Length: 274
Image (tube, rainbow, N blue to C red; front, top):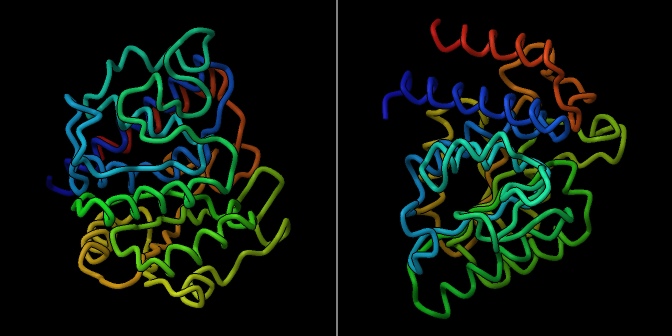
C-alpha cells in the first residue's frame, strides 16, 4: 500500500473512532487515536490473518492489553472486514456486540478479552509459547500502554518472555506519555522504557509511532530477530489527529459531544484531502 493511501485509510479510521465515541457518549479517544497508525500497518500489511475465517488456527495473534482503547481496534477490524462498519455506532450499548473492552467470545477478530491492565503480555507469552511447542509459525503481537508499565505483572511477564526465548513475540508500547491521572512522569515515572526491556533480555527498537516507514521497518525487523522477544517503543501523541485532543490528559476517557465531534471530523477530513 502506498503511503498516501495508508494515510487516507488511517484518517478514515480516526473519523470512525470519533463517530462511535460520540454515539456512545463515553469511551477513550486519546489512546485509541494514538495507536491506530500501528494497528493499521499490522492488520493491513504485516499480520497473517483471514477476516473471513477469524479463528483460522495458523493466523497471527493480537492482544490489546490496554483494552480501554478498544474503539481503535474495533474501527480497524471493521475496516479490515471482520464485521460490518454499521456495528461501530452501537459501541457500549446494552446487548450490542461491541462493549467497552474487547470480548473474544462475541467479537470476530478478538483473540483475547482484555480490560484489567497489566495482563496482556502474560497472555501473549502463552500464545507465543504454544506456537513454539506446537511447532507453528504464527507470530504474536501485543500493544500495551506506557502507563500500564506501572503494573508489576508486566515485568514478571517480560522476564518470562526472555527466559523462554519468545522471538515470535513482538510487544509494542504505545508511549504517548499520558494516563488517566496525568503524565506518566507525575504519576509513576516509567522511563527509560527501552533500557528496562533491554535489562530484562529483550531486543528493543525505538520509533516514531506515527511514521509509517518506521513502523513497517520495525515490525519487519522484529520478524527476523532471533533468540529474544522484541519490544517496539513507539513514541506517539495521545489524541493524534484531533488538535484539541492532542497531548491533553482530559481526553483519556471523555467522549466528544456533538459540537466537538463535528469539529474533530472536519479537521480529520481536511487532513485527508491535504
